[in-house]
Length: 375
Ligand code: ATP
Image (cartoon, rainbow, N blue to C red):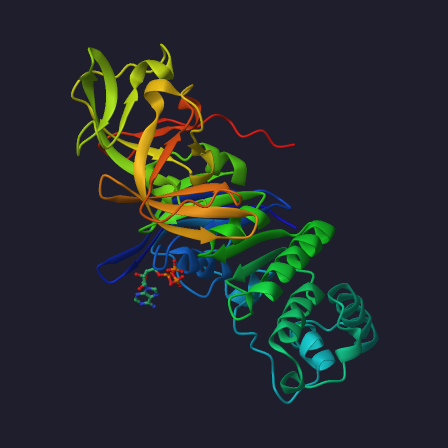
């Protein structure tokens, strides 16, 4: 086991800056997830740590060793890809033991013992004599994971390992991988474009965009305190609702008003308390998560009540998603499944000031939602 440190790591492909000055400390035994949209540089970052890609500038250390110049096999890491890369002519047992046979002079009996232990951990003991083509996708991925475990590496590097599996199996394998990583306490870096995977698996998650680090933190912190508009929109499903607003006087008091007009959206600035000072004319972007939108059933919310036409109602079983048009922007509200308004009718809603996120002209956060308390 080892900590992995990236110090100002950059990767260029010709004129393209794939990874731009990445600083990262992966703690010993930690499960760190790199997440971001396609092309943000997450695979390139992982491949540089693995030694499959050279570093344009900067340093990578694994444990106490600077590994920039080391070959992949000299780095003592195990990589798990989305295509399982199993040898078709070998049995599961041979596939799992092959790496050790090739790179060490470990006696066969010891290799066999390690393979059997890993197979038990992955629940594939019955498959040891099978060839890969006899296995389902999920089973092949288990073999690939087992093969990584057998090596007893200093770190696991996962590159979208579950994207070939169907949704149900993927959810199951997420739990399996988390369980095994917890048990083995091997430092792990996991790359995914799926924010749900990042939220459920990571001790900490690292959000990348356009080759640049956006935020690093525990999932709940990144969710409740996104540092900018990009992270706020990327983490969370359905995505956060956004609206362009401006500070304007309505009835003599400052409000956050939709740039489309006060009849579209207007929320009193005084609701946010003394600490938030917003000068008149300031342009901001407001963000509210779908689960923080409340249906108004009485007049208590007063001047915080908004109205928007419901475009679509999507029943999700436990909840309904209402899609509505707020000043030309599509908003989603997550409401109780007992509430199913007619499409086209006006939906009266509100939200508490402490759930509101506000972003400045550059997209930086100036107000977070309240801290989410973890039970
Ligand atoms: P995806 O999830 O689609 O794989 P990613 O976040 O993992 O995306 P990378 O694969 O790291 O992104 O790619 C980052 C950028 O570098 C992209 O613009 C990609 O086109 C470019 N890139 C990656 N590998 C190479 C290469 N070998 N040669 C040239 N450009 C590359």
